[in-house]
Length: 441
Image 1 (cartoon, rainbow, N blue to C red):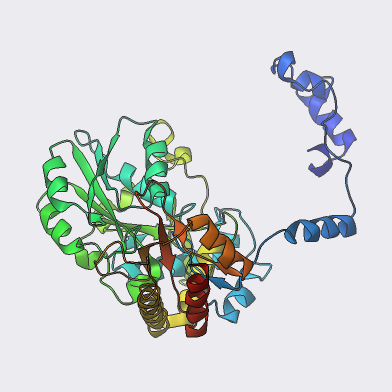
Image 2: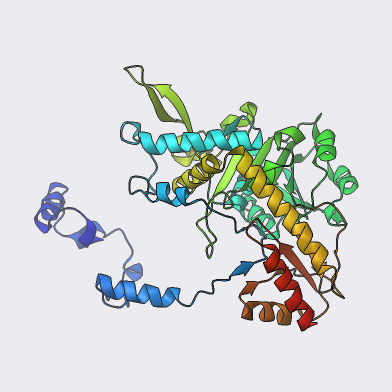
């Protein structure tokens, strides 16, 4: 790091002298000798900007960019208006630093405030934080939010994305909470089993809407069961679906979470993504991360500040219940710009088109021998079908035609694929997909 520290060797010697040390090595005497490097790092020599650019382009050339995508599972390909990148690529916004100093961070703070406002409008909830790392960590943080002194058991439906369930397990492994998985029946949360699992130790019930299999859960019935209890109702949502289906608030949810990637953030290999969280006023102080608030400065002008950071380790120290150290500010602003550009009608249209095209895709696939819907319930833009031949062969053939096919479900008794469609999938693409599958058969 010496090259990047903005002080000279002479200044460094002056600082060492001021604290009574003779050398930089003496400064690090407290570090055991056996963990120190006794030779330079085994890394290549530095390259020029041109060399780095060429190397990066060569690496990027290995990526497979599909013309058509029929896969979702938490990451979705939607149309992104050009204005989104135009605004978010401005150099004033491209920073990962948290805006602690309000007097020089009004632009970033306002962008987060607008994001929070839109998330509340989208979910129907009363308060939102400034975002967390991704949808899975948002779900895990929501589970921890629900913990009470005598309530430490989290019930999570088996119809929730397995990666979210795994993340929740990882998060609570360092706490005294326990995780129990509610069985599914016909692809949906088994409500009768859930009732039997509820007890005085239950802190929360978490479902996904639409769920991992694309089906719409009976959120009203679950909400009615939990309404007169102290058990927190958590719902992980697809934000685009909220353009046409009930909001979490309308289901009686206490905490709404989800993956914000569909809101203007392009598909990429692992991120960066965006976890949104929204809750009621009653639970506001349990939210992890930061909340940006609106106020007035000494001259009475509209201003923005970091209002609440109740669970953070640098505020609560030993009482902290979250180690979220940053927010996804650039991704959050991207979501805000996308929502502003699309508006209520645009989000509703994207949701309607995604749903209608998914149903057309399902109908066409079910025309093929050996392709049937595994679950008969109502679905949004994802669904599961059987496959009449080797799954790997199907996906390889589609890939050779520039098509990313459905996601193979692990652990299923028979060959199954989880398909997805969005507004970007045309009728011609769907018909081409079906024709290729017919030839594979």
